[in-house]
Image 1 (cartoon, rainbow, N blue to C red):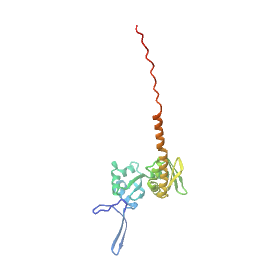
Image 2: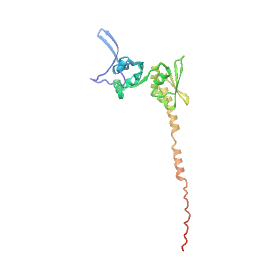
Image 3: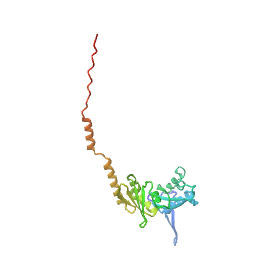
Image 4: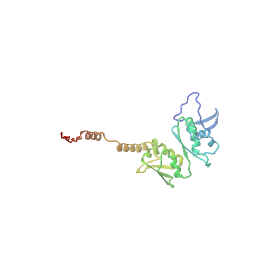
Length: 239
């Protein structure tokens, strides 16, 4: 059961059948709404291009009830795989989200190029560059300051799902501060600690202390005002 699910009498819900076993009491059916293939099944039922095989699901990463990332691909240049999943005015993806009880879904363009794939997987964040360490299958991803928190996601969710989707361990580094790094392997507490430090630093640089504001106001209001004296009017001789 997904954390978002609320079972009510008479409600129609879809489930993924994990297994069916015969027991002495009859068939024992195990159902799930949190399994990754639940997302795959909904996509296959709602998107004709996937059902027909024209568009292929290359991978799915899921935090059930919160967010899923789905990588799609097609060999047919006349088909937009992402557009096919979204539908006109978002009609298809809206139906899918409703079936998953409000779970957010990111549609990702699959690529055989690992660097391009990792960049796409970290969306909606914009990645500056990706450095790969093939031996350890680790990717060092560099982003600018205003994309750092977005690339990581709340509690590290975005970077963890991207790592799960691509199969690479991902380290997110801030371009102007290489020591500030979050890994897809970090726990939520460690991630939040780094993000809190980032937010505190931003507030320190943008907030002006109240004492400075008051001093500035006093300086302006107490400054002497000089008034230029008008020259005396010239007397016109009377004839």
